[in-house]
Image (cartoon, rainbow, N blue to C red; front, side, top):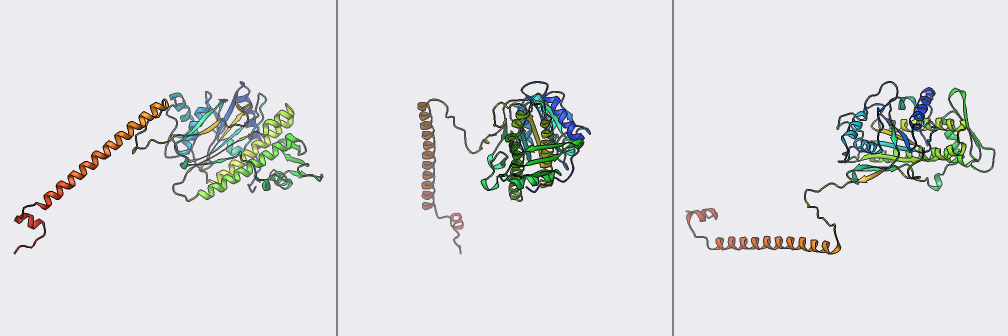
Length: 384
């Protein structure tokens, strides 16, 4: 982990983001909120005001999936309604030639009625477009697997890269905090992180919920570093594929369930918010601003530990081949195959016979061609 977390966060804006998420998600069960994070140097989203803006109505997960497809440079689903198209126009710049072709998509679970802030830096979320969203499942439609580079943030770390005390020390130092372990056993110390208003978050790594929460954030950072390495390997490749970095963070859910309404949950949310912001800042630097972030915050997911937004490959119709229907019973399929083979063989034989007849006729006329002045001239015979 070598991301630069040295810039101090804007705590008032983080608290504003926290409260906005709380207000959005406390309105109804089974809902969440989505934040579209624009580039720091390019405008891929509709320009909001100086504060975070929101839709007049909620947006569906299907609309979010369609937005991801468009941002990656693919066509949205053909079934997209006019209402959904209008929602996309509220989010995206209406310029098909101005797409980042790279998206950072992160789902974070564990935000129930008592919302906990998923933070991020002021310069990230202050330009965000946000909306309430209903929990469910949806697809991100892409036309060709070869045109997409997909990096999952849910990959477990290799054994030789598992989180150790050194990682916790580095993590704490990025926030101006500290990690002290007086025990012989690894991951048994106390992590202290400074927060807003001179508050502090103290977590004990000997507690399972605390340990999973922090190691989950560190693993997320390491997987983002892996995605950055993949991007650097793709630079200069022809053609350049679209890049989707997606994953799900469930570490906060267990943390919230452990402490309930305790103040430590809000502090943990502030830490997570700031971490996500720092991660997105590092991606902005690596991609030179040509990336858009989408963060989806939910309470209880429809399916535990599963992504709500899934990749769906749609094959392109080839102009050189006719699609053959293979639906029906096995007998019908065999009859259809026999019919197709019969037609193809008949056409092949007819074409071959025509070519043979044409060749024989040509040879006959060549052999019995009358010797006249014109034919000799065409035969390149010199006349005296």
